[in-house]
Length: 176
Length: 301
Image 1 (tube, helix red, strand yellow):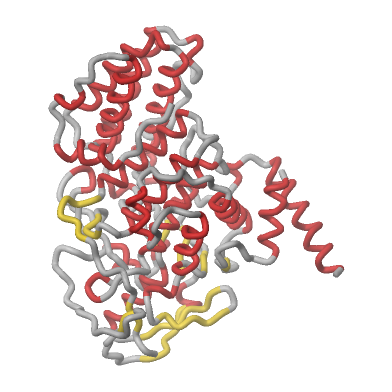
Image 2: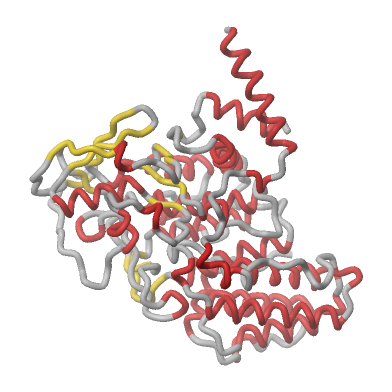
């Protein structure tokens, strides 16, 4: 029985540590090898240049966010897959993910930005890029925002590669 | 708070709902994160119908938490750390074995075709083998170590044993169920706009566990469900695509889709992150992918 109490005590003690130590404390090997340093400095998720919450976001700030998105997409497209385990998600995808997430939040919090958001998603879906996964997310979101805003849904008439449409077909519908 | 207490108490006994045992090479904090992921798996409130067709991929008529647990527990028994020492822990049981593996099947045993198509192999499975992968510059996310060692043995006509979590395991099937954590699992596999222990990031790590668990499937040329070479896109020339409709990427996508619908606490940017991840998984499916026999093979020791 005393072992149970000892285990419980240790458990509570460790739990308290985990509760108050922020997540990134998890053991990590040296995150990036020196030979990747030059590349990864372009891959890091930088501090947002516009507010994460869009209450204060104006049109010019949203425009800056769009520019940021296309820059990150371009970097992701041209990153060497050998820089990370190609079986897993590319390291370069996560900065793109972060900025797309900020756009999704901005449109939900400020309906005045929706027309620009639709234009962004259309441009993103039809851009000349082999990063089909990102284009597919943009095409899905274009459909969602066109339907939600009552705009004419022209997504099916866009000139996108069949692979992009195929990926969209495997994605879950966007949630409110 | 109480969830974390339960998680860490669970670690004291190194047990969990799916019966996975951790090798001592897994750092305690990483164990705690993975334990939390499994707790999150058990607390998922799965949707009733979306993408129900995907459930057949995981041998379920419809998605259920118990079914997801069963899928993992049948395929992953041990988790080892990134510093697991192959030289110290892998031994030889038998040499000069002419592999004639049989299949796990309730219908009886069947012979296995062993002709490997030229267009299909896994760089990771064949390269990882018994070599020291720690010197690689690639940040591996996770690796099915047991299947990797099994395939190396099959190639070399050897049956290996593996010392893991205090047990000596005969590695005579890819279903042996030993998965290795790679440094990328925590460095390179999470949404930067979400805490590491969020449900969204747990879903991403669990997706990886479902992916690796599926590498225990298959037989003959398809033993371990190896990846196929990508013909186009950013992974062109890499063995990072999927030729099996029911292969690792497909299973990972099916699970993560359920997580997407089940994550009631996910913020819009977390959902967008999961969607982008899903799109990457979907992009790995080759147009000619086929449904493959997922029964694992086993060689008699």
